[in-house]
Image (cartoon, rainbow, N blue to C red; front, side):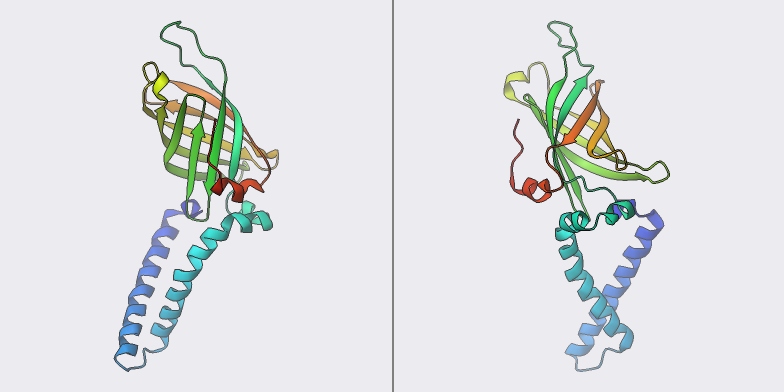
Length: 217
């Protein structure tokens, strides 16, 4: 959700956190030296301690919080945690037959917390993992997008016709229409592209389960 903040808010929060941390260090030094740290430095020390402990806890509990408090989705970003199944239709043509392949079954696992998000995609021939992710909220249109760059690793048996490559993908969700459906497109650096349509395998209950189970195809 950090990514959804305007850049000036990010800079302001980083600067404020740095100042508080600096003052907190002075407060600790004063207490070690046997001197009272003063009111402002005491407040900075307390705030720094709360942030240091609170942020990791909230980040870890975020999937549960957003499931328990659905209104958080409207204020932040939809909960995409879980395993999604669907189809991928590419414009790639088999170099041997020169024919376009049909839709492929695909499994996507999304892990999302307060501070980070990752995407893993698997087919019967390859696996992709995100290297960079960005969340985009178009609140007037009530649509939300997850954009990510990825690296694709093909299985050894198909590497001769489908080599390792990188690409970009976007997935869009419309909460009011269907909170368990994602649609999007992908583009690769080898000039291919395709459409993706996914449905969440279970409900939001899968959010915790997906953290422990591997993705298989």
